[in-house]
Length: 145
Image (cartoon, rainbow, N blue to C red; front, top):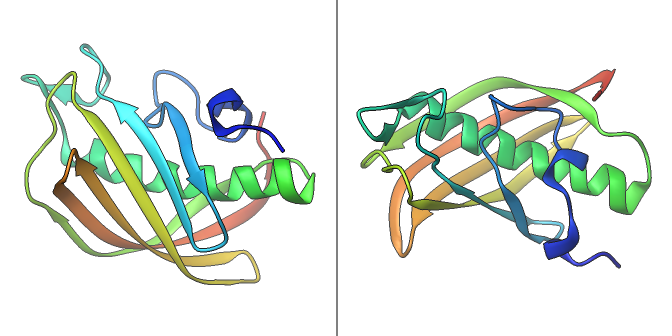
């Protein structure tokens, strides 16, 4: 089995720079996936030293994509495919993260049926919960490039 530390995040995510909001995969099991992202200075969605709410939401979505990308590549041994956000519910941002802070995002899978996933995402900086949401995502047919 591949160590999470050895996984190139670009191998399990269809996104590329400058629209990358996950640095590494920390954990995967059938119910929870955790990722990390350190907010870089000069990032596309950083303004006045803070990652925007849109950037936090994209981090949640890409953390969900990392889950399915890891599942496809390392467990099912099929190509990574592009996914889409179908719905966002209960999106709440308690505060925006600053440049240099590391987000640890947990995605808790509730349902996964016919390529449609329902999950809850929680973003933390240290022990502080800075954002939460429920996401519905759909897996498309197109393979990631």
